[in-house]
Amino acid sequence: MQFLSDNAARVHPRVWAALQAADGPDVPYDGDQLSARLDAAFSDLFGRDCAAVWVATGTAANCLALTTMVAPHGAVVCHQDAHIEGDEGGAPGFYLHGAKLLLAGGEGAKLTPEGIAAVIDPIKSDVHRVQPQAISITQASEQGCAYRLAELAALSAFAKARGLGLHMDGARFANAVTFLGCSPAEAATGADALSFGMTKNGAMSAEVVVLFDPAQAQLVRMRRKRAGHLQSKGRFVAAQVLAMLQDGLWLDNARAANAAAAAIAAGAGARLRYPVEANEVFLRCTAAERAALRAQGFGFYDWDQETARFVTAWNADPGAVAALARAIAAL
Image 1 (cartoon, one colour):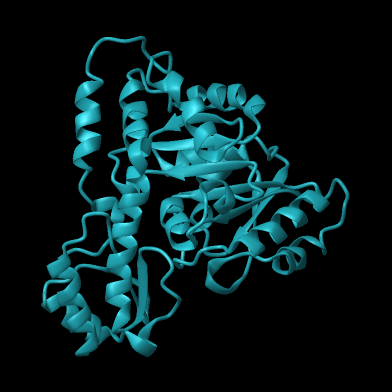
Image 2 (spheres, one colour; image 1 turned 180 degrees about the vertical axis):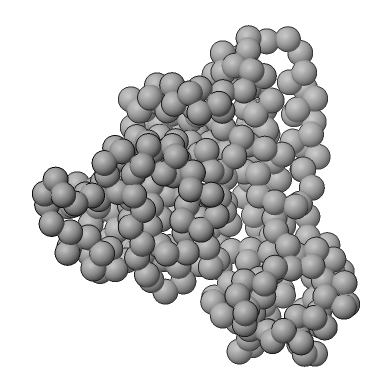
């Protein structure tokens, strides 16, 4: 009964079918018919002209998106718990050729204009200091919390006033859209570039850099090639993306994952560390309690010495979810 990560979930049958259907001959790299449909598909989804560049990993999506905003002598402001800071092995510095990450705090692993200002305002505007050039936020955050539309609007206004780009890490963007009950465009308010995650949500290995300034697309494509992420049979990545978008499968999958997380959280009471607004549940558990849960067959990660993290996926087994909820309530 695994709740380690949505990365461990099965590939959705419709994605497998799309991969099989893409197995005919076509132009290599991203010159195929499926890749050619992505710009229009995402423009329709967001209700505005945008460009979509596929990659295989979230790390590549985040870093390539940031290359459109940040020079090697610049900096990105992110939350201290951001994935680009703690879980990407220094990839942002590698892709951005030495650009710096500036870390800010914030409840629920979310940034605020005030928190960002506290970090960047003391930086002198001269050649001796790395200057901030972008903000990176995560929707939903690393603590499973969704930015509300008013929060996004405030961050967008702050970024524009300060001349900063705004990147959104959307590894669990579908979960945030589902929780908020809003449109994809609203959930990405103010973003200049969005890392649109699909691998955690039912795809095999498919992420998309969505650029709300299509003029940046060629830059990202050139850097994708240089970074080794231009796959020769790119149609198989594009096929996954289109299958996930078709008939709202990406939202259906997120709905199922969110519902499973909510069922686990329902009986957790005061153990909840953060509100459950996506598909992650963080619980206060002692070492002995975590051992007791593992002895019953539940797999999960220790978030810190006092916290266990449980992640649900689109194919979460209802029996396992109910069993975990009962086990937590009985601790």
